Image (cartoon, rainbow, N blue to C red; front, side, top):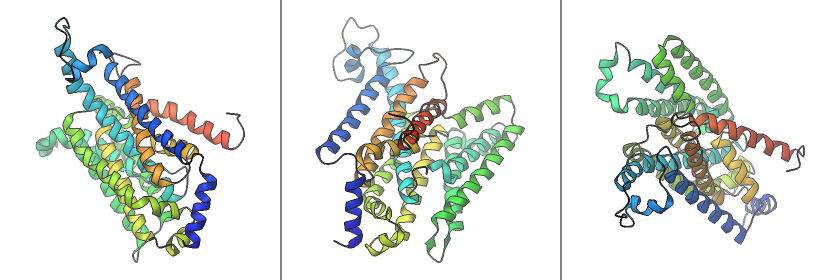
Length: 365
């Protein structure tokens, strides 16, 4: 064991809040929370499905001959709720994991995928697609009409990442500080572009842009779920190759290099993973904040800073939180639907503030 590895082990043991069997309990608890949240989301809505009818609606049991709602329950579940739950879980998991990766990469608990402009770049492209699709230029993109909005958001996020990487890389080395500063600048430019589009948009376009920027899963379909599933799979596989490197990177780039970690390769992998997962999320549901900040921060308090557990746990907790938030968003003002970004900000910001105040010893939680 190298000196850096020994120092890392001591660091994890000192900072970890939960170790050994207790960690397994925490992970099992996160899985149970996700399962309960999914069951709640499947049964609650404008057309409620009681738990007693859920097995028949899922096709796991024969329908009761006296159940007049069997066909309706199956249609609602398989056409609307299950794809929406699946997309919410995948997006929540990707945002949670992206936040954990960014915080490890920047060695800063305040890092967030939206911080580097990836979300803003996707949102700007999506807003542009909304305006163009309802203008005199619409016939040029009519063949892309069903996929124009998510495709534009994903391409915008990808182009933002490429620009950031080109700005921050020189002679094969990537400056994380320059990447962060350039991201803030590009986010400001993208937000200015969104402001311009809002200024020239008509009333209907303005409503669509606003709803997109606030985040929504109302357009969830099986085809969209199939589109983002490979992005989540890529993120899960990438975690296997980044967890140890992020653990050692906590000690600094020099210590990580001397312990055998290819720091530049790790940076590139992390940047690509964050961009792909964030771009996929923005392309489907718009901009959703605070999941990437709050989820990893809460988990570090429970299971410590080790990324081998932190990354998969972030996927589980992020999925649970977003499924729960989406369930609340579609029921709290039924039959209307509240943008999910409002709920994540309204709940996530106070929780994050309480965590910070607790760590400063200003509140006795």
